[in-house]
Length: 202
Length: 175
Image 1 (tube, rainbow over the protein chains, first blue to last red):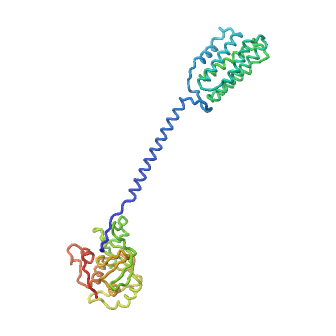
Image 2 (image 1 turned 30 degrees about the horizontal axis):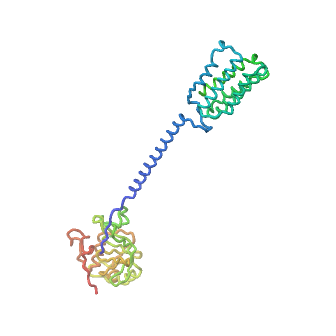
Image 3 (image 1 turned 45 degrees about the vertical axis):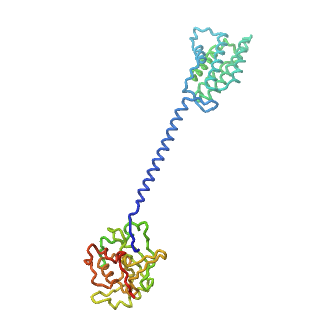
């Protein structure tokens, strides 16, 4: 047989175009799906506490813990109406300790070791017979409380560094050798700063 | 003479969107043997009737030996009235109507039982790449058939419907 027919070639470029088109569609959907996942995750971390990690910021989260609120209210009471005395200081410390503990529980952060030390200090305040040692104990309690709060701040509230520094300064301003009566302002200031810090955390 | 193209005849390689159809052999590169079983050359191109979508001529690049024979015998015209075939140097291509060839698939060979060595030697050749016109086609077919009365008007439907281009060609005994 000496017959040779010819035919049109298949349009290769059409197939190539089709392959490109399908590939483009696939890539688009994969990227689009990934983008969706990213968006969801970002929205999610705003609302979820991640316990045990040290790199979250719960500043935007409102725990609204009542014990903390109670401490804040106590401190923010009109000081002209409050009798500032040792009883006040003791109660303030008790409330501060409770508030700190409550806040720690809210954010699932363990400060038991720190809190135990605070409680010991507060006990000393309660039992201290001598005026001259009272300031020392108050200072001690103030320092330990500030440290506990600092630990919490570092873990969960990285943007509250300034407030914690202020608390530490306020604590340092309480001089252990000076009678408490003579450094009323320093002690009041300490509690005010602590209140502000806890209020922001809450 | 060789300046005009017959619009329907194309080199397959010039039709970028066409190829040899599935199920048909692409015989380009195959040896071509004459009726004397002598290899005259190789199939270089396939010339196609684009309308009919089929090959009508094999464009053969001939061997040197044929060319030498051609020079020897060019002084003897085939018959009265036919122009002398004069082949210049570099003119080493011939066309063969497809119906006058047979394909041997097994040996990748093309045979032309109807055209002998002498006929090929005396055929007017052209240079590779030259465009052939209908006048050349007609003269070639006349030469191969030894019939100067062949003319395009001999057929009703078209020149390529002639037997020389189809399987209906009846074999001749050249012995």
